Image 1 (tube, one colour):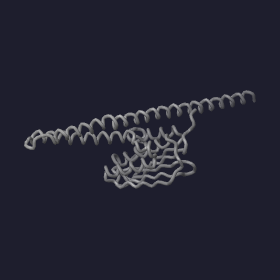
Image 2 (tube, rainbow, N blue to C red; image 1 turned 180 degrees about the vertical axis):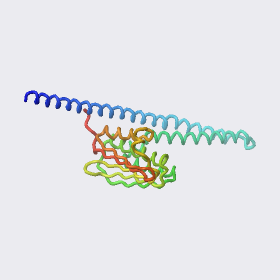
Image 3 (cartoon, helix red, strand yellow; image 1 turned 30 degrees about the vertical axis):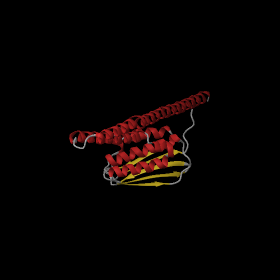
Length: 241
């Protein structure tokens, strides 16, 4: 009996150690992800406030030079107008890149406003019908909002660029004390196991980030039958270990 009790204690000690290691792994994973998002935020701000403002000033200066030219100087005027157009296109590309890195609306107005912006922007850019279904949610922690936004962003990107979907539904609701996000499309579908193994679709990254926050990640798809990505996470992030 003593030997059996000792074995049970050793087994319990091993389980406790594994659980502590798992909690520590998740804590470190969340810390790394926070650093990544902070860096995205910094780069987005520098693109918008630094490079973006410089391009705006350059475009304004070029316009001033163009207006000061003699009317008959058509060759130089045409070259300046081409430079102004290029500057404008580069400015718009810079702003889009800044928003993709970290949309300011997510920090300023929260997840619901950010999802509305994302759906509108993706629908206008792709011509795809994207429907957003939002239910009122309790105030979510910033990390949870970022997590759900990134999942929606990645799932929409997959639906548009890879699945060639014609319509997409993005739904965010509260269920049993958890925030539940679903992205459902009518696209080509795919082999889920193969996609997770290859890592090219971003599904593996989404799944691992969701697990860091003690969430559940589920993908249902098959070739020719569309895709449903469903994520469920606690309304508040796990406390720091």
